Image 1 (tube, rainbow, N blue to C red):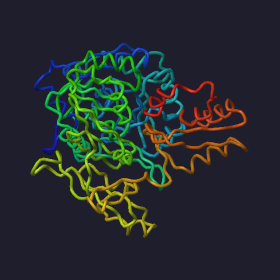
Image 2: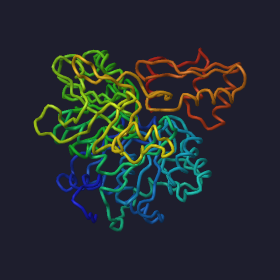
Image 3: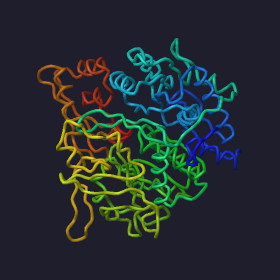
Image 4: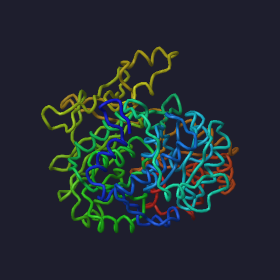
Length: 509
């Protein structure tokens, strides 16, 4: 690797660990991977992972993907995802993170908006044929030149990456620059769908906030139940793992029996999970089976719910609340001994926040419109640049801040910042965000009498419910439009609704 500046890339961080401990355990698959993808689970040392990364990088270069081209990835929370991301960076590519729930309509928009040159997936995820979805979306994206995947039964024309990994190869050296884009994630704001590119430096800044505020030790073993298809999901898994230099174990959300086995058998030091899931695991006593667990990172997709959340019980593990503001950025706050959320104040926040002279993790302020804005080393200001035609929008926020749209106020007595409501006009079901008006548009396509609405949900923010004269036909119509399962299954019959305890698993993808 030829790096022209002192700042490391993610691949650079990986290589540093590789040089120190090539035979240390690096990545652990979910133990139920066979059900998820049809492949057996794997455990890789850093040396084994490096060999696979190099082979994949060589394949991408040989396929004619030029430096800084975009490669889209839609994969489950398995070892192959992390190998692919690091291989893409080693080949000088930019990774577009495609949420697992996306189907043809959203995939096609994302591929066209980013000009993606390649797409990587697996043959199936949880019984869904993602390889065929990728092929269909690629057919409508004129920029796509290469489609490849892991697993068996790949469709004709899709290159097998399992075969690539089986043949060791070294890629030609590619210049990597930490200041250039590393990933593209996708957000929905009041102005619509928005690709959000981030540099290696942005990602590392976010990872440092999580690792330092959560008190993670070097060499920590981390269990991640976050699907890494967003800035927060990737940061709370890949980036934190590379910064601590330990082992990253993966859980594809969510299987109670599998998760309990992993907690008991892997002896992990830390857990990253959606906040609703982390609190539920604490309430039902499942975390007590993890003897070594010391740090829990709870990621709040609905940050307005943090202040009213229950106390974290006294015990071996401590909790760090991670406030997520879409793809704009995040804020972390380690709970004190009483287990209650810490008050958050406007201004600059350090990492860790209680240490003198700590580095700048980010800055919070209130806009004149009463919404929360972010600034700092992880925040991609250019991606959220206001529309030049909207003078009011430009005047409301300083040019070096991103307005998250979350309603907020300061408490007069304490000066604490209170996030009171999500962005107006935007709905969030787990990690999936969309415009409220889209619900009306989708319902209109189903004819007179159809209704599609979002209901408040403690774990997911919202959940969708639909009603039509013929629910089965409504599901077929939405699926034919290429919409994702959240929309389609909103019209499921009441007799076939899944158990409420499994709902977060669907919405958390």
